[in-house]
Image (cartoon, rainbow, N blue to C red; front, side, top):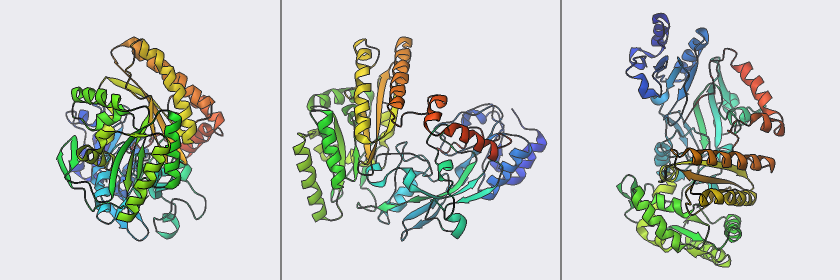
Length: 490
């Protein structure tokens, strides 16, 4: 839906003729052929001006970064944030970084490693915005974004600039709360719709010590990078266990001892996905590795701050694994495979291969909560898959679930998959039924389940009627309805 000449000119006056487009030949490259226009702001002032024009002309808008996902109503104004790609500040003393929306995690991580620092890399991948909320492989030592998102600059749906946290009172970025009342719960929404209306234009993220080298000695080609040598005082291992209970025993003790840099509860299918380059090779490697493990397992990365620290952590790890009857997967001890997993899982390029594994499509149920309880839930969800496997409706991928500890195991995430052929309508219906049934069970048993499945009316009353308060909030800050579904910063 093309804009009128007068409205188009008003937006053009803000960003310049070269930074706005409504050409029907170009629009399909931006997810939809029916966008009102694509606009590329360069700073907060231009974002604010665009949002105010959207309110004036009653036009909906959505801001997008790397553009993995997004649904866009007809005629919407698409804010392409790629010109706002600056690392504003890296504060080494106070250990935070300030970024604009189009700074991707890989870009920020590379600069941080040079300074002996790193950040929580979200599981969506290193090519997503560093401002993206979420969890990922490094949660064991860096926690999730509840802890890591600090002060934020926010253009509201009406075009006001709000400076949240310490930024609003001291012009400093070190804190996401106060002094005074905090809006953290409104900008960090983890329940439907999971996004905040308006546009985040700058955000501070918490940083952590990096014990590795200033840059990885990477060699090879995508999607299979490895290392010319394993960095000093770093190690990757994969351990399998005779039962889920034994695996959890080891995982809990590793968290208590705080020896791991990263701990991911991969199943063997995921290991195979991350060390191969084709579906055919992956199938062959999976079948071979599946014979070499004794049951469920996890991958762990140890990173020492000194040779002595590294040796200590290795000895503790070996004792914990031995006590739980764990078994090391020899293939991962190969320096080439070890190097691949270091690249994939610290740089977080692993998620692509994990997610888009061979065998067709997949549905999953992610839940958060106490790690031991989420594992117990996942055991039941895995057993509910068995009849579907026996009927040939889903693929037996060698592992019912995967997950990881958050903050050394104080919390955790568990996610369970069903992989199936999407052209098989019976399989699709069966998987959707399994997904709904097990998500409902997780909710009734009071886990933090997949809340994005259209169950708001059931979930809301159990969470202080948040959905009613959220509706009141959005009506108050977006009276013209110009920011539907919030800002899709991915």
